[in-house]
Image (cartoon, rainbow, N blue to C red; front, side):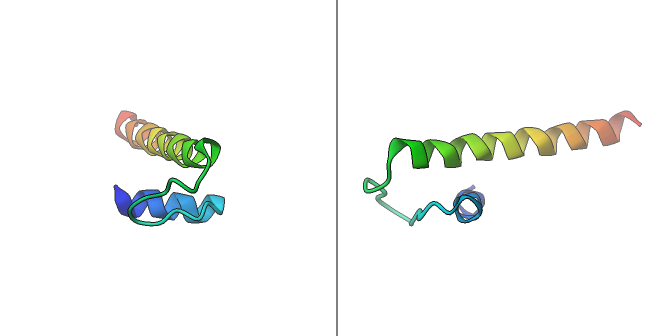
Length: 53
């Protein structure tokens, strides 16, 4: 999950590091978490659509 989080942060241009990230705003951290959830839902929907066919 950490690898996924870092990939998303990279995509969004958020300078996330391993360990403490108190220098980042709540908006930056929230955008990473929100986008992670969006991607996980998209992947699950694709998986479910493939099983229904």
